[in-house]
Amino acid sequence: MYKIIRQILQSGIKTETPPGIDDALRCTAQRLENAILERFGGALAIRHVDAGSCNGCELEIHALSNPYYNLEGLGIHFVASPRHADMLLVTGPVSRHMETALQRTYEAIPEPKLVVAVGDCGCSGGLFGESYASRGRVASVIPVDVAVPGCPPPPFALMQGILTGISSRMG
Image (tube, rainbow, N blue to C red):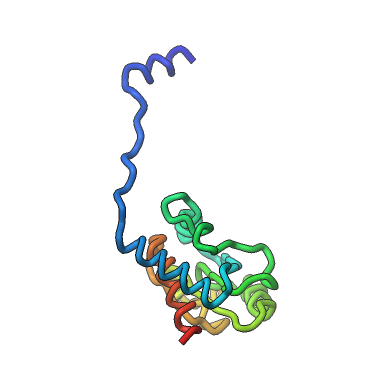
């Protein structure tokens, strides 16, 4: 313990500098909040399904809940049951073992439902593609409304994808 305290006193506490104000993020957040208020009455419930990803996309999705992006503050929350969801967020190529579970989750979401495929694997099958163990992209199993490419896509791209999905159903 003494060594750790001495090291802290010698080097100081190292932290990252906070990110600056991003006007594009603020504008997207405001548009997203208005769209959710208009379309869903103030709250959007998302059910996330990992259909076989490497967890890179999940880390970026988790980043949406940090204070910088503050997804909960915009009225978006993740739910455990597809019956309470408005949107399905799917990551990874769909493995053969997850195919039926993904179809059942999709069928359990009440209409009108939105599906967002996240990451290169969700959009195109990515590195894995179609094989004996993988069905490839999400669209080969269920209908997809919005695809958010990237490996992994940054949280800002995820927010834009969610906004695109909501906007496509509004107009």
